[in-house]
Image 1 (cartoon, rainbow, N blue to C red):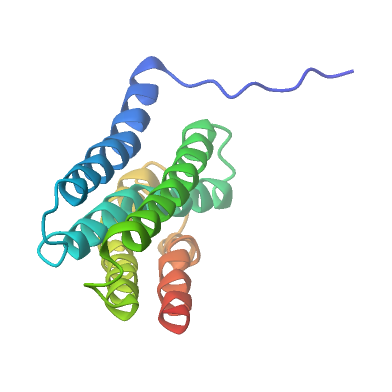
Image 2: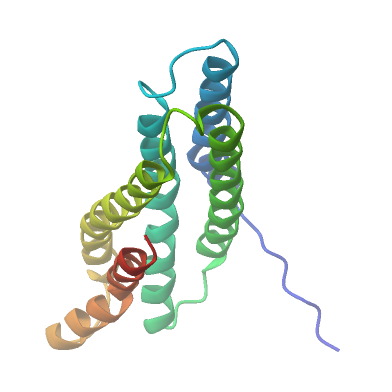
Length: 176
């Protein structure tokens, strides 16, 4: 019977994942909670905090999904970093969404309408899709530089791997 493969990451990769995802979750959510508990006006900072925190978490998440798709198209075997990044990203994104909704319903419901919160969520998704698409194009060309394939195949692989932000942004348009 074959042994299951363990998800192995280098030490610097673990540090990057923890820093990329947990810094916005811890810093921005608790800063917002601190300001709300101290009686600050939520109109001044809450929606901006929602926009920034969701965008900072979604950019590396979407980029990891695109790079995972690119590595699968090129039949690469080393996909551990992308899988771990997607897992951490989903966990942190759901925590941040829950934290933002909790803070909204607990402290800011009477001063900010739910429609403005939905606009902040939708804008953060669209902004993160745009930024991650631009970063993905650069990372993809660096990744595909050493591969032996014709140019048309490389471009079609890039379009397939980079389709996730487009689909994500279109679906967020209909949801929000």
